[in-house]
Image (cartoon, rainbow, N blue to C red; front, side, top):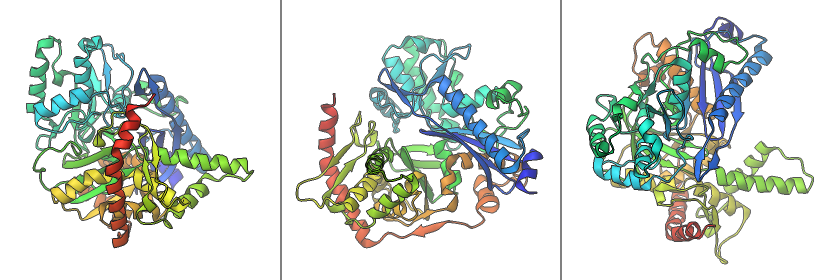
Length: 530
């Protein structure tokens, strides 16, 4: 069938992902190829010192994104979406969405970007003998308890953004195991919340006298392919305000953006990995065995089918680059030169390739928000140079591209140099890699490893959750997720690989050494921030 026939017959599959700056929808055909897209741009808000998105923004964004997809289908194929074979919802991982028994949000959604949970994360890490990051839901919950926030007594449901959207559209209070592992650690053997840690937490908070226990308020954890409900009549109307979309469509377990990134890059097998680099960045390495000990820089999560993953998550990546490119845009406009943003980004990124391997001594700290990996509780973007450094446009851009993945390198050095983790393939995706060959070369130098980028890298997590939705309804051979992706989606395609050069590796190592030495400058800037 052609794309129009696939849509009209109800055999297309929809994936929607809530990213930090964009909600994106991807419609795929029976061969897992994208046939239509929709999008809605949005931004988080800093309210009372905490990063959030309002409930109104969540639903308006979802509906506008779906409306954008409908218009794309209408303009391309002259038809309407009436039904679908499956749907999947994904969103930025972690954070805190707490509801009472009437499903009313008790406090504004607290996103992964917040770093106010240091006290709770430290106590829980010690209690569990396991690294508990600041952004995990359990850190947010315990910090609320430490702060004596009154709403905690009224909690009946605690979930993530992806879990919330899925719950409201299907009536099923569930979560994909990958996203669940960002609430409280998951046992890779049982594919659900670690029973020992859950028990320890309940014992810890017992003196508070809450009416609930942790298992009472957490979503049920599901592995990829498991039944997770169907779109209800009310859910169909919430998603498609035009009223065309029918109820009864299967919806796969909701996942976090880390899980969908692994799927979109075919990195769910052991000894594979991926790097997602956009507003934030994170690397995911699927492990053959557990690490020798906990590391504060490394989070332990799972693939969407429950395999153990070492994750290095950085709160900041391309936002500061975008701000500088915006400055160059203003300069062009001032001169009366027409601005094509794709051309502007491409020209500046490619200029970075002409820079010195160590950026001529220039340094960029891209900390728009706090960066837990390097111990910064708040953000203050800085560009640092000395009078003797080589201050050229090429070095300037290269320094910002290096700075965007500097923290990522610090965490991965632990995996590769201290834990001697072996990886056969690392695949990159996200906006950092949009200009061909540039971000890829920088990351190869940072990790001293070949980096692959696929043609589908730009499709991102929305495509990844669409693939998971397809796995839930089209896995007729009952294959594992890894085998399903190999056979039905990627068919041996590993993308275009870039090998790091010795000079680039050496240059990045010199850059990162200067970066480490200059971290007190960033700390001082944060300490003296107005």
